[in-house]
Image (cartoon, rainbow, N blue to C red):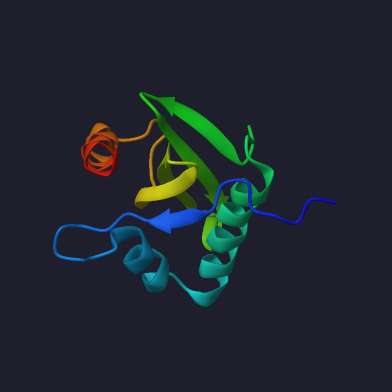
Length: 114
């Protein structure tokens, strides 16, 4: 069995050295942190991976889909750059569709990466 990461994850870093996705993950409960971490790991080792764990959002953006505690739904939006998974943006999903402002922010960050 291949134990190597096919797509190692890296946190997007702002010009002021903040890592928004890392900060978001650290703000979650311990249980939710484990769930998100495990789902990101599934993508790292299983790439390319489809539903239910991962889905294309178009324009080079993908989402890691996490079912969190208390019925919450977490999403981590990433892009693939230089054979790395760059974690651009994360949020708790409250509606069926991904909110446009979340997509815009992820696209803006992706442009800074590539």
